Picture 1 (cartoon, helix red, strand yellow):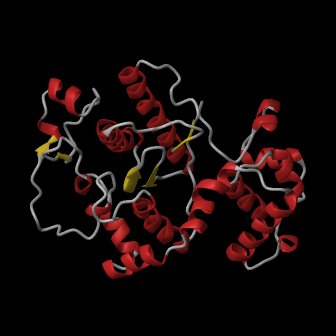
Picture 2 (cartoon, one colour):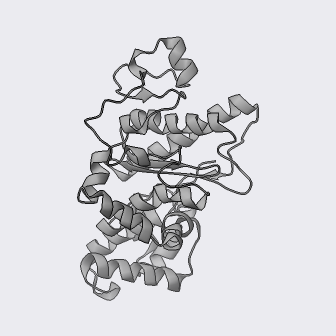
Picture 3 (cartoon, rainbow, N blue to C red):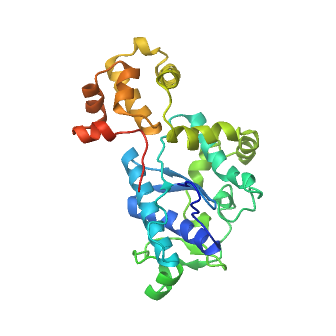
Length: 296
């Protein structure tokens, strides 16, 4: 989630804390699992596990909608987040997963903080001593009034194991799936830290932030598609069966800002074939479809 132009997602510590809580609450609503997150003043990243790509999109939509309501009530400003854009991206390889899970907490460095001391991150939940008993207030024990005041929601939270620390903030150790991240790095914390240290932030910024928000010329998009085809199928574009083209087309549509017309040109398919592959039926869908998720 990125605040475009001059839009700020978080103006003070309360905003940071509320956005972290909504990351967890919206995940519960939409049945996705949070792995790790990072909240900054004008953007945030959340890595989640979801059963389908659409569920991840629904989660992104819900997170923006819920936080926008909080913002509007607190600051008495309508449409305050209208220039905030939300993306759901599919991590399609082991390399991509590992680098994304390292890139997310590394954002603290670019904001002038140390990775291990930045407060608004799920970093401290990873490779922690799981035998150590955590000290905090259990959210499930809150009265309705306490829940409204501290969690800023009326959702039923009686079945969660989340804890609130002495500052009133949600503890990431209690809602992040640290086991998934640790397994991705072979349960080796040194491997994870090495990945964070060796990461090319400009490359990941391009893959996770910039590329999904700009339309490439046909020639550049064709290069991206060809490289992905070789990685997935060990075949060039000219050798792909139509079935494999459809699989690749769906992925490109989800991860790149593009249009049906451009996809038809790059994949050498008719517009009707592209629409069928993407599940688009209406002329309006054909005209407005793009490979990004934009909420206004």
